[in-house]
Amino acid sequence: MKIAILGTRGIPNNYGGFEQCAEYLSSGLVKKGHDITIYSPHFHPYKKDMYKGVNIIRMLSPEKILGKSASNFFYDYLCFVDATRR
Image (cartoon, rainbow, N blue to C red; front, side, top):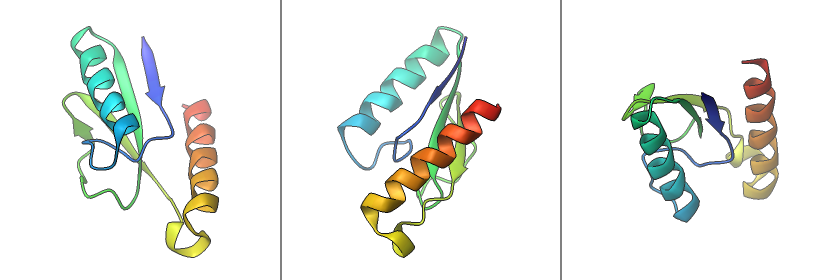
């Protein structure tokens, strides 16, 4: 099954509980044979396209321009649009 996880600050986790859950869940689902993709903001320090078999797609997050709250909305919207096109 193809699964995308949106709304995260990326993996490997360096932010909080939701990201830790996304990391464990995604790597566990990969071990069961699923095709997992996680969206990550462009400023996340991990720059590779794959982590423990999980595909990583970096997306623009204009946090420095719009502030944290507004940029989260914009980032989530861009991730949603990209995921529906894939």
